[in-house]
Image (cartoon, rainbow, N blue to C red; front, side, top):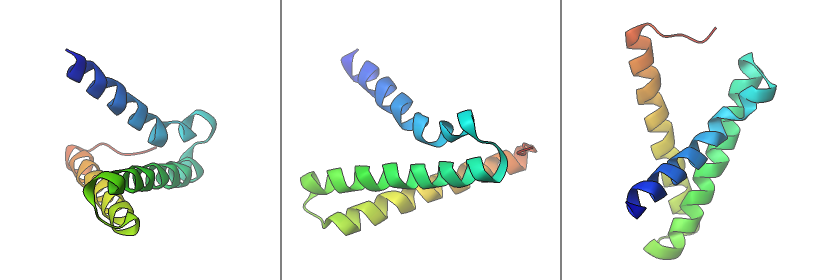
Length: 87
C-alpha cells in the first residue's frame, strides 16, 4: 500500500510541471512554458539519479530529458491518431 501511495503522489507531483502553465497562459505561450518546465524538472530528476547510478550528471540529465521527449512524442502520436487536437 505504501508503494502505491508513494507512486501516486510522485506521479501527481510530476504531472504538475506540464500542467501549471495552463493555469495562467494559453496557446503557444502555455505550451512553450510547459515544455520548458517539464524539461527542467526532468533534468533535475536526472541530476538526482546521477547521485545513485554512478553516471555523470550531464549524461543522466540529458538521458532523462530525452526519455521524457520520447514519451511526449508517443503521447502526441496516440492523440493525433485518435483525432484529438489542441484548440
